[in-house]
Length: 312
Length: 207
Image (tube, rainbow over all chains, first blue to last red; front, side):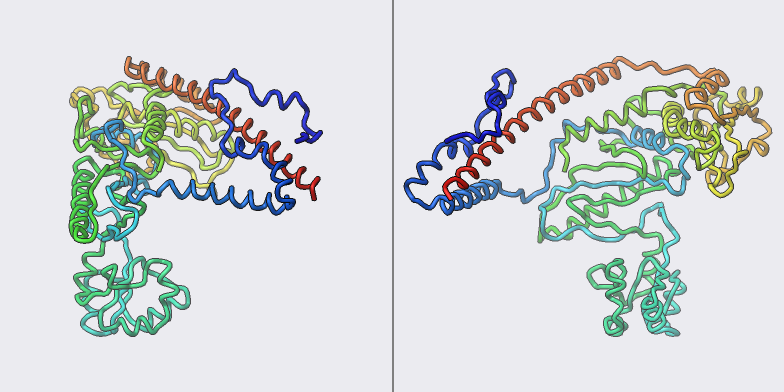
């Protein structure tokens, strides 16, 4: 076939250089179809249709190749022997350096627990109270009949807003003055009728039995929620803040142990449906790098634990 | 998710940047506290202090974990062209130094939430020296601080040097590979274009 005149021969001759290490291999796609079209034309007399067929066939072939690569069912679990791992004190020293000069209340330690888990299926999701809570200013709303004993209990336990209609009205007007929302079991029908799910749902505030936010004993639930943090597995990783930057190694260690323990219990609760396990634990901070932990508090050559507990 | 080797290489770069470089100094034991005060906006000579905080102070803190280092930034609204940019270095006074033998591990008594401590209300047992950071670059500030405190620099250890060498090797290798593969991809693309055009022309001729 005649090459179109727009190509200069010198360019074409440079198509097959041999000096690079990555020797050029014509793809099967090219090798297969470089000559045939002209012969085919004579054979069928319907060249354009033929070409179209070719094209569609090619597409199918490519698609098949892509489909052959079966998607993994599990998240990857790299071999941690190659990973740099740190003791808690070493990791904290790096993170405290990275956070120098930040307001101590705004910068936080975060823990990322990477799980051995399938990509679909049930996820770890719960709420817990750390031995050393980070945030104690959570505002809680409780949906229950106002002026009842339940409401009094809730207020005594530390709820900010209590009521039924009053809360619904406020939410509809866009005044959401709380970070968590609980609902008493008896008030659930009223809540579902009120039509606030559209507003609360996207903010993850809508009470539901799934998130343990529809409860009978409101007082206890509120008590457990003040200073509690929520966590949930996303893409095989559970993340949560585990300490303010001012915390010392002992406090952080206790929080980490409590959090990992809680996640392991949740994994145990899911054991009949899906098998999961803790793969890697990474400590990071608001502005700092993520450091994989080796499980020890102090390593060889670590600084004194008191040094990393100095405020700022 | 990103591969482990890539992740670790990136982490190594970050950690080396925290460990080594300008500002990797060990302060003498009588330095008790470093406080910086400068504006949120860089106008009026506040750029150097910010750069110092973001780069040198991080390394200083890594090598002196027991010394509290605080940064107090003048709010944007309150900042005027006359706003000062100062660093105050608090030294233990002579007798205090004798009593506390291990100065590195004495806990700081200062309240973390009140970062607005000014040199005037400092502890009377402390000697406070200030550095004017206004209109100075970060390297000039570091130089002044080194002179004032007589801090001595950290030299990279053998392990650090080895790590740096490996990272540099890796960088050169990856640069070479990416160049090579870019050429390869360009060639493939050109070939495909030629073929595609040839086929189209053929279709046009026969139509």
